[in-house]
Image (cartoon, rainbow, N blue to C red; front, side, top):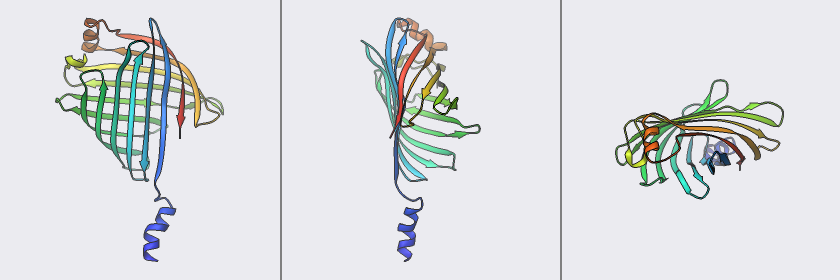
Length: 224
C-alpha cells in the first residue's frame, strides 16, 4: 500500500507525464519587394514541475532560402503556478557562421494574462545576447481573438560576422486576428513590422540588407 500511495496514487492525481506541441506562428508574409515565411513554436514533455522543452523559430525569403533559424533544448522547472525557469542550449542553424549558446531564461503568465518570455544567451565565442517577447490574447467574440505581439533583441557587443551591433538590435511589432472555433487549428491574418535598429541597422545597410518593413501575414496557429 505504501508503494501504491507513493507512485500509483500520485500519478493518477497529477503526477503523470504530459506533452504538448504548439506552433504559435506559422505564416506567409507579404512585404514590399519580397515575400517570405516565418515560424515560431515549441514542444514539451514532462510533469507539473519539471519538463524538457524544445523551441524553434526562423524565417526566410522566397527565392533566397532560410535567413535565420534556431533551435533550443531546455530544462524547464516551475517556480510557482505561473512562472518557469529554463536553462539549456541554443543553436543557430542560420545565418552563417553558426553559433551555439548557453541559455537561461524565464517564461510565464504576467498579471492581466500577458504571456511573457525572456532569455539571455552566451555563445561559444563569448557573444552575449538577450531577448524579450510578450503577447496578449484579447477575445473579441466567442471565436475571434486579437493578438498584439512584441519582440525585442539586444546584443552586448558588436558581432560583425552576423551583422549584429551592440545595443538594441531589432524590434518586431505584430497584430494578428485569429478565428478560433477550434483551439487546435486556428487560421489568422494580420500585420507585422520588423526593424533593425542602431548599429545593427548600419551594418545591414552596408551589406545591402533591408533595415525595416511592414508586411501582411496569413497563417495558422496549431497545437496538439
